[in-house]
Amino acid sequence: MTRDAVELPELPEYRDNPFINRLPPVLSIADALRTLTNLPTHSDEERHYPAHLRCHCLQRLGRYFVPLERHLQLEARLSALIRQGYVGRNPNTTDYLHRLHNDHERVLQKNLFASVHPVESTASGFALIGCSGIGKTKSVERVLHLYPKIIHHQEPFSLQQVVWLKLECPHKGSAKQLCISFFHEVDKLLGTRFQARYGSSRLSIDEMVVRMAEVADRHALGILVIDEIQHLMRAPGAGRDDLLNFLVALVNTIGIPVMIVGTPAALPLLQGAFRQARRASGLGSLIWERHANDATWNHFIERMWRYQWTREPTPLTDDLRRVLYEESQGIVDLVVKLYMLAQLQAIQLNAVTGRDKGERMTAGLFKHVASDAFRLLAPMITALKRNDRAALEHYDDLQPLDDYVFQAFQAATIRLSAMPASATAMPPEKPPTPPVEDGSDAILASLQGVGLARDIAEVLLIQAKAENPGLSPLDLVATVIGKLRERGPEAKPVKSRRNRETKSVVSALPADPADIRTIVSAATTDDTTAYDALLAAGVIKPPLLDVAV
Image (cartoon, rainbow, N blue to C red; front, side):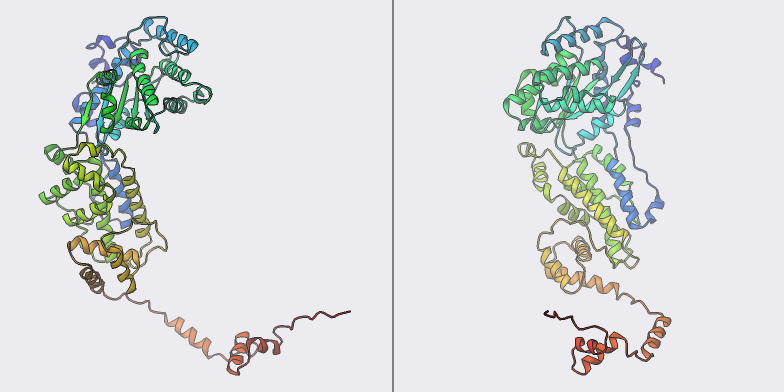
């Protein structure tokens, strides 16, 4: 179905507006569901790839995206937000020209609220709030990428329309730093030099915000998205108020829709002032709670479960469903990373032990991986289990977990790519791994004492813990040693007959009396120093003595 058939005849307020007509068509629910879906490439043949290649395949799950009801709702609201903002900025009418005249007056007076023409704003604000890892940023970016960032216009005048721009709230909540980030992003898109002209530290904050509003209006910015708005909580009172007032002015005065994204820590900030709360609810704010263990969550898990790169597929059981929800507490980012790391662990265990056991994923394996990988997030998981909203406000960043996953895959890829078929050789160096707790250091020291390399000992210990939860340290050592005995001794390389014959022929040759090795060996037998023997043989010369004149 074409845009003309869907959009123009039925929506007269969008008709003859070039800023809207050049946008993609309004999507139905079915079209949005199909367009937003992003499934990783997968085939059964890849199960037979070498272990280090399958580690790379596993990382495709990081881009896995299946739209749920909340994502379809987000797409519909962003679609309306962008288009409604353009209704009051039609370049075919005097509205857009009046806005440009007002921008010029604001620049002259260095006052964001100066104007020469009364204009009506059709823009609204919108807030998306949810705990860290719920998928806010990824979902917003997925929807925004349904729209082009730039549209080039030739009629009614030459113009580069910027449809959307996404910025991260400065860590110190500085309005000036937000303006500099804005100029930087626009320069990257359009090849301009706004940051050099308007981003200087010599300019006051009033001049910067006026210039930012003028640039946004000149290039018909469709929507400005500010992520991590909870960073404002770290800003001093005056700076926090300045930035909030500026964002409100963009919506009310300039007529540019603004969407803010943040964690529950931002709720007191938005509810503290009536104006911000009202403007953030222009099209209704969305509060994304963690997923309940319901049909929607099960649908997400079932679709994700298809993407396995282990030797044999592991069927999804009710016990595995329960463990996945218990360890992730309905946080999408956590359950995807847990699924990736569990497969990675199963592949590594099979490669190191040398026993093809199918690389199955078990509830014990998921629990052990979660206890190791989510160690830094244990207070957050506990707060989720207790539904402690006050405690959750302190967790607005999952970067440590992202770093851990990246490091784990990097280490596994290096280790497995360097591992020979016997699975005994390891690369001499590897990235540092997180310290192992719960007495594991002592167990690893004991295993190293019997001649086992530490990295192999770590993998065997993880497997022993996963297969036998609750064992004492002594029993764990015995279990690991038992696994080594099951493997049997490695076959020693057999030297070729040719090498043995060459060595015997060389040893049978008569010794050369002038050979340095022969001279030194004879000196050792005669209780003579090597130096004296070499000196007597004329191999070395005595040192020159100074002669007095």
